[in-house]
Image (cartoon, rainbow, N blue to C red; front, side):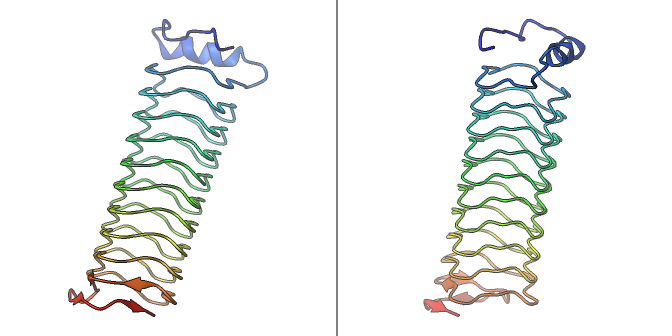
Length: 229
């Protein structure tokens, strides 16, 4: 399977025909780096450990696909459908996931450093222990998402919706959460040193043992004392 080269296919129809010929729905370990896969249907396909570095997957259907350990560094997945996809331990370094649908996706342990996720939908997604350092999540939907133990240093969550999300033990050092909806979210033992919480909504938010130092609080004032609530 690794010997197959679909980069020579010049049309979406050719690529879809290629996929249809895979009766077992498996592309395990295949190298599709740099391939043009725009709007392709890979729903439910096993792409575990596949290389999709720099691939064009704009508008692709990857719902329920298996991307465990796959490398999608620099890939363009804007407007792609990854609903209920298994992306456990996948690498999305500097990938473009703007407006992508990642509802109920499994991104536990995924490497999402500097990923573009603005206006994406990650409702009910699992991002436990994922690395989202310096990621752009402006206006992103993260309602009831699980981010337990995630590393989110310098992440931009401006205007995002984290209502009901579980952010226990998350590291949000220097994160920008200004204007975010944090209603009913759980920040138990979260690290919020030097984070910007200006204008956030905190109705019913759980902040037990959360740590604050040089944090810009919801009223715009700077908290200069280390505080565990």
